[in-house]
Length: 413
Ligand code: ATP
Ligand code: MG
Image 1 (spheres, helix red, strand yellow):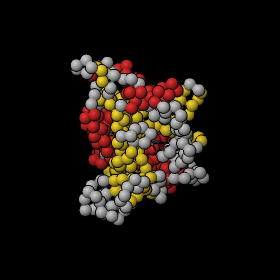
Image 2: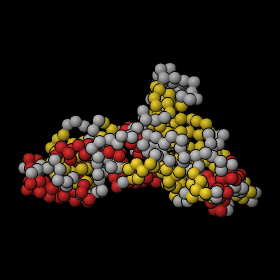
Image 3: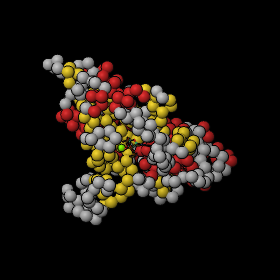
Image 4: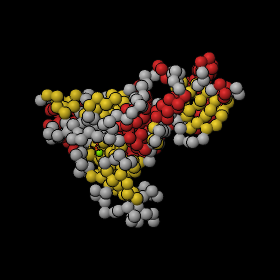
């Protein structure tokens, strides 16, 4: 892809209203555009990142045998009356009959009711990746807390509590894999069920100063608790191992709940068991804030020059920067395009900065936009058929034969 065709416009200055690094860098880099408080457009570069995160999530949800569906965002108020959640103050209500979905238990449970005609249909796990609407009192921190945001929400139905318990643990592992593949270290924090249930739940937290929560945690064994409920403090000994506890601000990137029969009872879901007796399935629900995850990655991976995307979620893995004056630039650009073709054939995402801009501007933008690998092609490097290779997070660069670049990229991908 050529820079001039990729729909990228960077800004020189940070937006004056940016209250966090993700708001600053994502807007400055032209990944997103703020439309109003807590509402953003995702521009070509931003959408590419989002798509990569979604692919990771889809793969991992597939690994726990979940099927993808897409339910409407516009939902009947009637359904919410059945569970008593029609008066929740974060709900947007376009009119007296509808609610913009802020969670989807009220939609998925009646859906499952039609599907579950026999115990053989259990367990059932459905997920969607969809826009949610919440009238947050304080939309803040860029895409960490929006009023419109993308969530992956999943709901599972089981014949028995044991079935749910086993599945819940499988999903927990899948969640760790999702966050790990996004480059993040997540801690699972035992929490109360909150709005959803009186039963157990786990939040997944990532350490970042932009987070609204604080947790005490153990780097050694992974034990963690929200300081709101914990009796522990940073500096004390971990209750599970000999390590000293840390205390840091964090953001909730995911949340899983055991819902029990609250929703299946409300919608009168009954499934005949092997003996023909009708039983009410137990339910679990599992959320990941997809757009919040993207913002969290920026909070975790940036430096004074811009974003440093982890490889699996980078909008482009490699940026090739041809430089030189006049005809020499044309030669560099030609070589850059040749290299782009070779790398693309290997399945590598490549951007060629074909702009008529100074090298300084191109290097600055490459750092701001955070592409993991940069290859500069200049008249000087071309004398030996080489380019200058640099990893975004490293200081040193090295020269590399252009024909070796593909191999080198695949080694670290
Ligand atoms: P929070 O405590 O941060 O308000 P929540 O507990 O209300 O979040 P859940 O209902 O558990 O959120 O939603 C599942 C996931 O969706 C959360 O773990 C979070 O990652 C994400 N999420 C929730 N609210 C927002 C929001 N306003 N903007 C972006 N992502 C959100
Ligand atoms: Mg939550």
